[in-house]
Image 1 (spheres, rainbow, N blue to C red):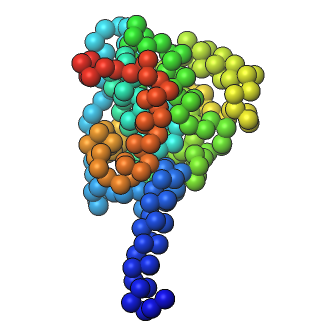
Image 2: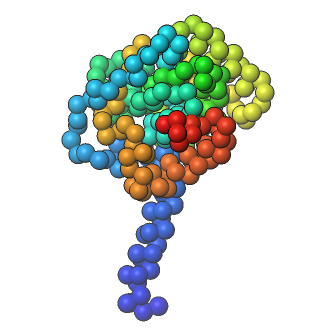
Image 3: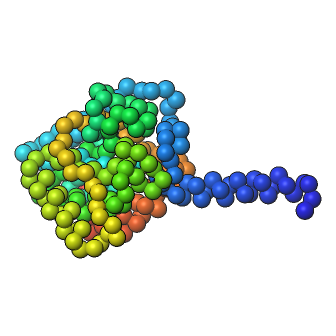
Length: 237
């Protein structure tokens, strides 16, 4: 090997390492610094709220299953889902920021708040999509994302949701679908804080960003294949 060959080999090796790291998905990043940040400074919380209830039939559920960029991308494609907003829930600190939540000191989980029409998609189907798009058996962890902010959690908004979620969780445990017991937290909803604006519709607005290409897109394609009969058509969006 000549000395002149070294720069090219180092560059190739670095590129392969970078791609493999990105392909590990949300399983790689631990802190705010590990994920690409669009804006350098802390921004005010988004003023976006869950979709206004057009009628009494719409329901809201708040779900935590790791990185909300991924989860939001999944749920916004489900038929009957009116909105899926990234945010924070389950903590004690008022008006938490992304940086604070990533520190693991606020008690909040990264969540999405889903508004849906039960006439178009059942709560059972919402739960199915939730439990089949992350690992609910790892406590405070999704892959290499470690901390209470990445915990598996269902924040129910009424007693019926609580009963259905609890029964479904028991059914999954008894079925042996997962090799370990489900540790998903099922607790009463108290407060939801929308995440900063740059987190909303992240995949949709940043499709060519490397994280979206190598992490979110493969997971989304798998999701689309598995839930093909539950997805919105292009005309319905």
